[in-house]
Image (cartoon, rainbow, N blue to C red; front, side, top):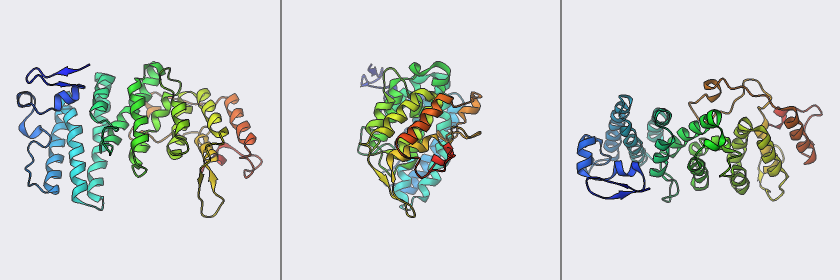
Length: 331
């Protein structure tokens, strides 16, 4: 559905792009001059000056959001991206980037999560569309932060309304990041693990997507499967069996003091904590979903037996003790 600006008549695919477009009439009504991303930056500003200006404006926009201005959060995400971009230009070592990213990653993630809880999935879908990880050669710098909020609400929706209530666009977004993010984008890739909570969705096959990229993206697939067990352990064990039995997944992990480990063996690491009290997946950051929902988990005996049978069938028990436990499957 297109959204048209009442002032200039231009059409946009998303409400976020409508809000952020360069229309003087709209901006004068909704924002101070300094609130328009890049609008107040002089062409001769240094990266340090640009970064300081963006950080100051980001604080302002987050304060406005806290005071009830929902639209300010859309601009805050854009300003966060601008601050990160300036930080990259300013310091090749990455220290300045990290100094900006980590404090605001939490603050902006929390704000996006708050907005999604009050405004619904439409708000996050708008943000997703405005920061498309497939649009340019590089994923947006704010991708980990948007993915964090998407992951939180994916889990929340699954636990409150069921898997069918998760918007397909949210699952496609997380999957697209995995496909498009470089291997060096560790933080973005870590925030994607909640994708596993979409397992069993009627309109998006999480298992098919994981299977398709297991050989190229094993370090993301395994922790995503771990999340899937907490969402639906029967569907998850079926997915694990499918992947571990597939000999076309033939990559190996080099190890210094021991033989190389096959990807298929590495996948079994996802069950490491399933029978360990107090063990929960660590992603998304800043969100203790098991505490919010007073969530408890108990591995079904039949599922445990299927995992044990799988380990023995594939011969991955050869180097395990006779009385091996799931913790012995950890890497």
